[in-house]
Length: 190
Image 1: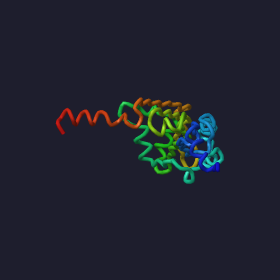
Image 2 (image 1 turned 135 degrees about the vertical axis):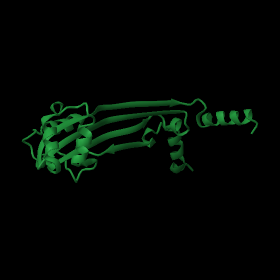
Image 3 (image 1 turned 180 degrees about the vertical axis):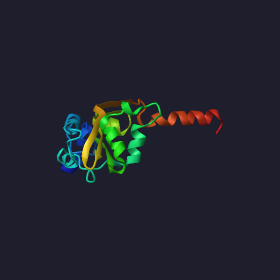
Image 4 (image 1 turned 45 degrees about the horizontal axis):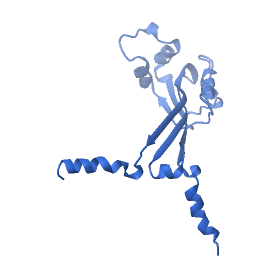
């Protein structure tokens, strides 16, 4: 008598089973794209925007992950790194923050949306014959300086498009890595 349960392992063996390959993602933001995060920061107007505008733009200091609160000392270290820099070289918002001393606060925001996916044939990947990984997404960072809850400076940067492809082929599959240690131990007499 034919049993459907015995057919399942055969079907798995014969199929590519790409859906069984590992996938991972890293998300520390509600922003769907780099441009959306950039537009949120650029909408802050120095000397006019308030702390509440950060919340309404999608950056929620104290509630969102990966937001570093910078003290006045942190701002000094970041923006005045050497004696070669003169006061006139600094942005007026940075100068206002430095002069405000303890009323100066900075926020450094690092937001990431990365997806890593293994592609190809499950069995070739599982037995280490052929592995194909693709990483896509974006990384965005911004610095906002505030004096008494008023934005005095904002700056942004990051990586708008992450696209990395990693392909490894091992003709010997699971036996690929046992060659060199065996060769080395026989050459040294161990």
